[in-house]
Amino acid sequence: MMKNFSRADRISGQIRRDLAEIIRSELKDPRVGMISLTAVEITPDYAHAKVFFTTLDVSHLPEIQSGLARAAGFLRHELGRRIRIHTLPELHFLHDDSLERGASLSRLIDEAAALASPDD
Image (cartoon, rainbow, N blue to C red; front, side, top):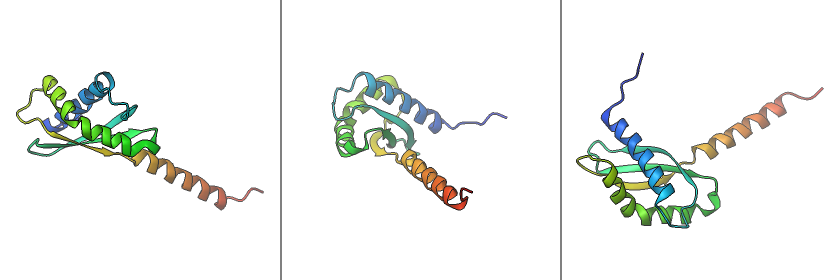
């Protein structure tokens, strides 16, 4: 059975894909570097969008967030040229640390399992 996606889900997905392309090809801020957009959550009135991203270079996270915040207006403008919706959302960038948390939990589980099964 196919899942029905809401209009907001489709728009969120389109925003994520288009923003990823704009960041990759048009954003020239050296602070941003290589990031991956993991999700976009849009408010019901389309006024705001939380854009979640990950980066391999967590040590430069403050610089990356600063670069994204500074570029938010440019990114919104470029997004408006690609997506035609009544209200173009204001973009808010948030670091998605779920991958790091997942890796940490996996390590902890592996360590606990190693301690629980003694090597005979």
